[in-house]
Length: 296
Image (cartoon, rainbow, N blue to C red; front, side, top):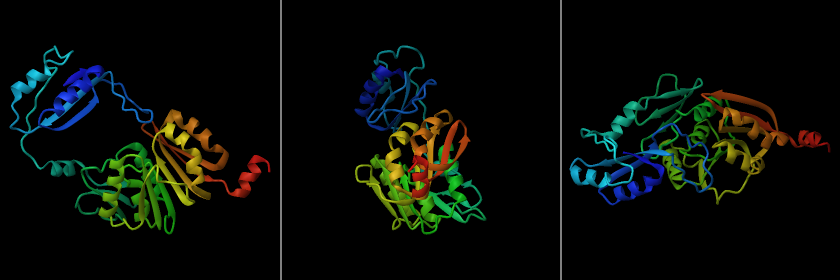
């Protein structure tokens, strides 16, 4: 169903009063929302609303109700598709195939066999396992992590999402991993995925409010440019001198803005790009070099 932004809430409320199984709102044109503010849930000017109902739901009264929504006055504005009954989890798994990052790190869905030569295997399941490694920012982070030695390291994964980066560090030998996010679903996904990969004893999951900076060897933050800039003092305070900092989730044209927020305390900056997205890697200055930089 296609509606204008101002009518999306009305349609969503109408659907929630029906025996709906799921409701999804997506962009119906080409108006990306790249970085909403805190506590904001912005919508696009044109919204496509998709609702899932059981096969027994009467269609005529439902369609009559939806056609009363303002702006729904053109043919095919409300469309209906019927699907044969399927094992939808199986369909998801069939579409999600093993992915390789670097030489030895893999993400493998469900119970699929590990590919030959896959030394480090991270398993993700359907459900809340968003952040599967397919997005360029996550892909760049995992490719960098494949080349790193995490044995005995302490790691902070800030804005953990599915926990994919923190879990990858644990699989590669990190001794302690702290995963932080403000979204309760992200925290649940991280806990579930940690158990799925048998690293739940290594990973600590915290809300943003529960987290306080503690010195770690590696800081990973795959979020967005705005939060990366705002969180610079927190993330730098969480990293030991000489420790590795990996920042991702920004567009390529936003790298300079992010770099400025960190440049006083980092060295050896490297920039990776993929599909218009960027990832920054650097190390925190040692105390001696920091004092030299500020002229003490």
